Length: 472
Image (cartoon, rainbow, N blue to C red; front, side, top):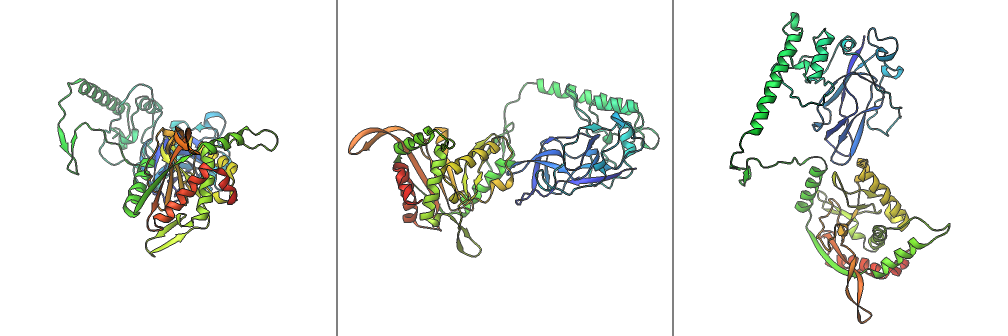
C-alpha cells in the first residue's frame, strides 16, 4: 500500500506570494527521490528549482507551464511507499530506499543535498494500485505525455473531478487517451460504477477533432474590421489589441517603479565629465603582467569603487526613510546594486559590503552576479538589500537619463556612454572621452548642496583618478 502526500508550493522567502510554473521536471508516473527538483518556477525576483520533500511516485501535477500559483497551492501529489506488485527490476521496480520519508527542505541549495534520481516510471495500470487514498483538495490534473501533432483538450464532464484513482481498468484505454491527449479524469464513464470504456474515449476523440476543425475554419474566415472597445480606464482599445500580463519580473519592476514615483520626492542633477584619464588608468591596470597582475577591471567596477568612496564622504545618500517613524535611517555599510538587463527583464543584483572591496574585488563580484543573472540563477537574496544603485545605461548607446530610484534606497547614479567629444583641456580645444553622469536623489534625505557635492566628487574622480588615493 502507498500513502498519497500533497506537496504545496513552499514559501520562497523575501516576501514572495506567488510564482509562475516555467518548466515541469517530472511527469506523472515518474519515481522521484527526496529533495529531487520537480519544477522550475519564476518569481518576481529569480528563477528557482523547487525540490520535493517526499520520495515516491508522482500521481498528479497541478497547473500547466505558464500558470501562476500562490504560495501554499498544491504543486503535485506523491504516492509514498512501495506499490503492490512493484518488486523486481526494470520498469516495475519499486521506489528508492529514500522514498519512504521527507526532508522538509524548501529550495535547492538549502539544507541537505540529495543526488538527482534517475527517472523511472510506474506502468499506468499499476499506478492506480499504488494509490489507496488521496487526501487532496482541489482538482488534480493527471497529464499524459504530449504528442507532436496539434491536439485540443476537451472537457466532457462538467462535474468536479473526482479524487483518487481514475476509474479505468484497460491499459488499451489509457494508451488511447494518452495518444490523443485526453484527460481521463475529466471523462464521465458509461460503464458500471462510472468505469471509463473505450467508447467513452472514442467519443471524446471525435469531439476533439470536431472542435479542432471548427477552430481551423474560424481562423480561415475573413478578418472583420477592428471595432474600438472601451477599456476600463475609458481609453478606446481595438478588440484584437494584445494584452501582456504584468507579472513575474516585469510585474515586480512595475510595482517598484510605481511605488518609487509615488512615495519618493526625487530630484535629478547631472554633469559632463572628462573620462580620458580614467580610461587610461583602466588600460594601464589591464595591461599589467606578471604574478601580481590581477583580473581585468571593467569601467563599471571603477565607477562602483568611486561610488563607495563618494558615499563615505556623503553618507546621507546611503540611507533610507522610515515613513512610519518619520526618520532618516543612515546605513553603515554599502551594498551596491547595479542594473543588469536580461532576457527576463531588468534586475538589480547586489554586491554585498562593497565599501570593503577594491576595484578588482568589486569587478569579480559584478562578473559573477552578471553571469547568474544572464542564466536566470540569481537567488532572491542576491537581488535584495541594496543601499545604493549604479545604472550604466551607456551600454545602450545613450548619453543621459533621469534614473528612477530603486525603492527604498535614497539615490541612484546613472552613467551614459563614454565617447569622443570636443572638450576644452588645459585651455585648448581637444577631443576627449566624455561621459554624462546623472544623480537622482530623495530630497527628503538631503538638499541639492549635498547631492551636488556627491556628484561633483564622482566627476572629479572620473577626471582625475588620483583623487581616490586620498580616500584609501
